[in-house]
Image (cartoon, rainbow, N blue to C red; front, side):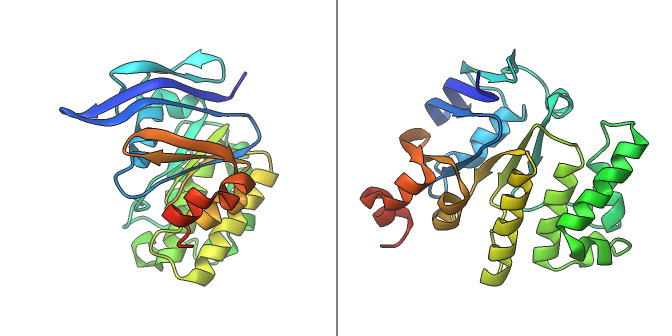
Length: 236
């Protein structure tokens, strides 16, 4: 049984159809990448999974449970956490307080303290900046904080939406090395990313999305070697 399974999802913004018969699955303990150009429906997919919008038809199952019509806060409690595109931090709060906001559904203080330490180990820069106001961090530091905050929910599934967007190449390398580390620690990851090359390098499996339709799927290695993917997304 897959940890997450979307089956025949149709989703709309008003009269505009954003997803068409979309079916994907994410197995426990893997990194799955969803690649595609702007407007392909990648963020819509994450919004549909996280309950911020509901599909017109189709079903979503998570950990054996139907969550097609479940609300966002309940979905977080079930074990899905998202680091959104654009980071969406609380800019006037400190780094530490932003991290604590990621644990708002939890009341296990020892566990929360342990996870603060885990995030500090993953992102040493955040430990150095723990009392700094989030809005004054650099772009790379803000991305680290957004990812750290989402980990504070202790998710079964971590969804990352464009984690490398707008970052300098050296920081892109840092972010993807952290994705590998998160995965190695046992967290399942669904990665939405325009940097197809980096996404496919880190992914166990991947899907290619075009105008709301899955047009190709396979292992990250196979899609990296695909001539069609190379021409469309890898600039080859």
